Image (cartoon, rainbow, N blue to C red; front, top):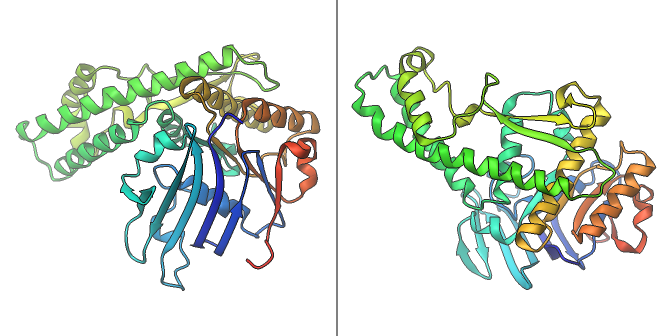
Length: 361
């Protein structure tokens, strides 16, 4: 295998799993069992091996078993970069989330380089037809795999914007109060746009070189009103300065990278993703996950960890087989869930099958 792989996973008081321990090899993983047994909860636990709030974007306290009052823990052995590392993330009751790498405390952002990760969950099926916020978060999550400092840039921009919004709501008009905050927003915002564009360029290159059964997606970043996004520090700073009166009226910052959108087109048909059928939209999402995985492998030499929740349920047998073949060709450890093992039969011995619940858990 040539991808990041989890070879041991242990959960404590995480969602429905009071205790769960899995020992694994580097092959793709199929978790199967009845609905409500906790398959998605395992994927969510894995998603906490990367920075942020996981695939459900849950608050730290929401994933623990509150009645136990003990907090939660996710521990894993991860093969990455030719080494096996011990990763542990936890939250004690009422405390914020912490991360340890090989027994030493590290910031969450350290996980971005160690465990590149992509995921696709059923909630994302409406990505192309819902509000821009979801697509923007999807884009930023993708970007983190190519620019591991992207999360810091987003946090710096949002922190300065919150302070600026506070001034706007309080009716402050003295420009001296705004200058420093707008300069911080402009500097971080220009990096954000540059990072996002690099991500799309990497994915575009990976698509161009791919042999795949899934459709190519033409991607571009647009401002909230359909125009080109603000790209440079000067453009962003000038826009913030010129928009102060409108922003004061609204009580918030109306323009900037925090309102940009990800637009996609089904290339072979020339059809915007939002106008495609449900099946075509799903195929585009799978195509993006695969292309992103190829791009990450090309960049860092190993495929990312891939989390695919209920991915096979709405694919015909030909597409299922194509997906499994492409995952195995990538050398990715993909974690896939489904109600029955038969959905993944074409994988055969190329994958490891785990039925939930496990005996004794």
